[in-house]
Image 1: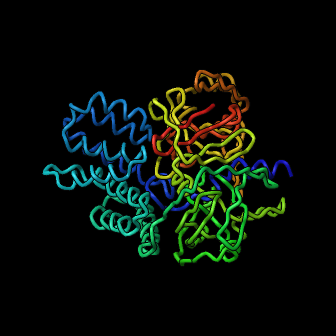
Image 2: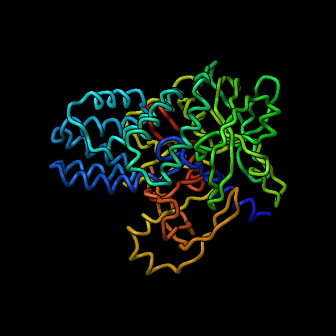
Image 3: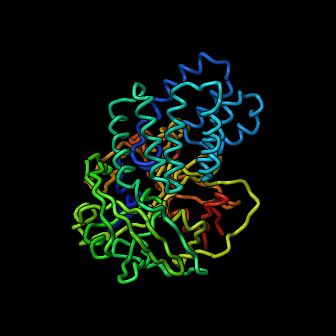
Length: 444
């Protein structure tokens, strides 16, 4: 049983890879590589060499370095390239309204950017609208992308875009999510049989335990739990990919009222799956639901303690340091030792990816023997070439040594980050604060 539990814990954040939902991070991560190739061709026809460097970092999703480079080189860029970069950065650092304002300036600019960049801009606008729960605006943005830039899309990307259109069409007449705070919230999280942390939620008449997971790009619920909690089911026929690539169908549900301590969340969107898609019969384990990033981000600030308390303070923490958290679509990123990683409270163990191997290839090949890395989820499991390595992270002046970290040798989902930070790092501290306004992750 222990091995089965460990597999579930390691992969709950990657349990469902949805095929083409919001922007680059949440559903479908296929479009950017093709766009980069097209963009480079376009850039060769312009003198904006400094922007080429910026765009390479944007493509790698290293928004922290993009911000530093942009501050140094902004005055040397044509104004339309400034607007583009600012739209990207405001989006990455969770300022969707400001990002859309820059996009409006781009739309009214007399100088037109290459089509490949404008395609990316409309994807960003889609993401911005989603983060403001403006589903009609998201639908309009994806329609523009499909109608005006169809020739730039691969067949897979066209399929992804059509899937997006299904989602926004299904949601376009639904009210926006709203959050009401009625004081501080402090809840003791409970661990289930898979040792995953759960929060007790209520819809007024019923209560139920949901997994808390920043690595889940969207909140998820089983069909039986949705019926029990009397959520509104919206047929959408969305294509969802498990980690092994097996396609699963899903619909949407709207939770009219979700109570979490002293917090009331109205009109939250969930993906709903057949119970079997969220079931692990080998340990007699059924997931009721997962509170994912869109709900967590709306709380503005979340604190997690070593003794498993979930805290949402009515008054935000204030710090005076540069942002070390960004968002790729709805996937949180953290900046450590000059490298960017995804950040997943639902992953028990940290995992390193192909970019880390490429940067350290000589030493890794010399010191470690290759092994098979097994990864599993709601569609089975798969094995990949990799290594078991030791590495020390440096956070707030503290050394965090980890042993036997899984390192993937090759990209399996076009990863551009260096890895995924999990609970083995988080457990080194007494308390962790996630602030989605100032965009920082603070460890105490």
